[in-house]
Image (tube, rainbow over all chains, first blue to last red; front, top):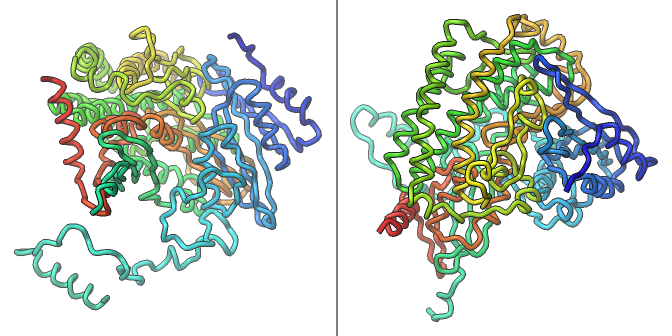
Length: 211
Length: 409
């Protein structure tokens, strides 16, 4: 099985030939490091939401891509998701990054799932749902990923509007003291003797005040 | 209690984690006797919101924050973040800095793989091998301390270059360390790979097929052990790797076949220690003279970063696989967006196919085999007939050791 190695321009051509009208912007960025200044390339596509799945299908048609991660930024009235892929891995010095950026208006934060095309994507999609309040249509696993179950609903840590982290969750946390609704520790707290006896006594008193 | 209520499957929960670890995970297994039927896991037990913090700080501050993302990968996160910012701000890194970055990058790989090998030995019940690998790992740690000033949180990479040079009198220290490891490697390979019991425990245990590895976006040694030819140092020339001829290490080169099991992951990691020694030696002989940073004065550097606009991806091959930072800057002090993708982020999904159908005593070594640090298996709760009993990590470890002893008889 020999698949020809494409140049970054040829990769862009494949996309413009198939979904040219839907591509709002396509550019190639280049970076050279080391003494020999071998280049590596990143291909950036700015596309419409409807074209996300067709674009990934074209990418799979070239070679099966590696999905690195789904990046995201809150641009005020819209959220921009950046699907970061790489293709042609395993070929010496010929791997390119290919990214598809999709802008979602905050009035309609839905995006189709891509986890049927790339099963590993479900991890990143779950993360985007809880961190940005994006709704992934058809996601096979709708649970939270990183955030705990008792994290307040409607708060999205990466949003920069009123749904972001409120100051009360990060400032003056000392004032909130120990939460009172936590279960008792599994291990029994040992009696402290000697030098530590006095401060230990103090903490037990302060926890009494809490309850 | 009715007898049918005692029937399998019953649920076993493993986790959450030890707070000192990078990837704390809560596992829920559905068991049929000794066999794992389904696997589910919940990461994020100690999610610290580092990206949120970063989006309120400037790039020079973030570099030191990235140092603290992981206790083992001190270079990879700082390096990939710096690579992203340098692309946005169009900073050209001096060639000497590229080489110093690569040297430290490889030392980090050596110490990380040796640490992992020790953990793997411990989980199989070979504590003498754990002590041997961790003792020899100290030498790499000493060299890292000599080069950067720190054993962890090196603080060596800065946007635009590195913060410390490697002086000629440090070359012999590095050289002594490399030759020690090259001499030891034969012994380590022999101890791990020729041992009958390790082969019995690890061969065809926790298999990840090539197809699953590609579809689940697996990276690094875990992917390579399944026969996926992927190594950023080979595919995607960054820092000094474009000048060196690094080739991905695949298990078939060593043993002529690929199983995609725990044993293959040991093979790949141990061979990479030797490869890293060669890379460091080559870097040291070819390192060019010149400055080590594009901009020494932090105030000037900050002014450059503040003007920068655009988005970029910094990407490096960490000991566990691809580490990626996506940064977008809009001409402000702090980046508009910052996404950190550590290597284990991509590897966790591979646990599901690996663990299915395996025995409970194999859980520790399989979970450890992708190198997320096994001590995550902090506490185990077994729910059976509605009665919840908590097993300690020690209990699970004892099960693993007992299996090894049984096999040795």
